[in-house]
Image 1 (tube, one colour):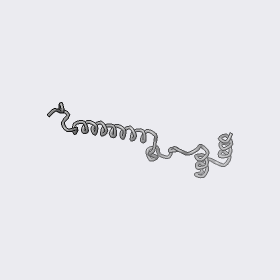
Image 2: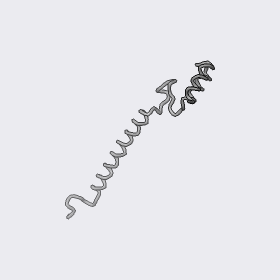
Image 3: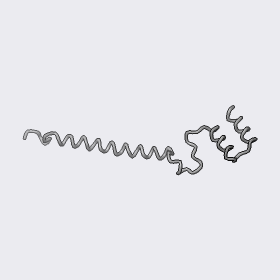
Image 4: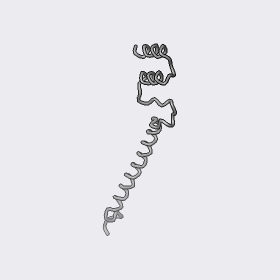
Length: 82
């Protein structure tokens, strides 16, 4: 009666909630895709996961594991510190 199809305002609120719902859904999908793309799953990359560590940290770890000898460690360390 006299509201020209808008009822008591619930139609507008339903529309707003629908828009907000889709913003949340699409935003969530975008965040999940970015999270996966940026490599926050070390088990997906095997032993080659080095996100957030410096080259010197990786070099020390390789030396500690015995993958490189002391001479190679010192040489590479000197190259990295230059």
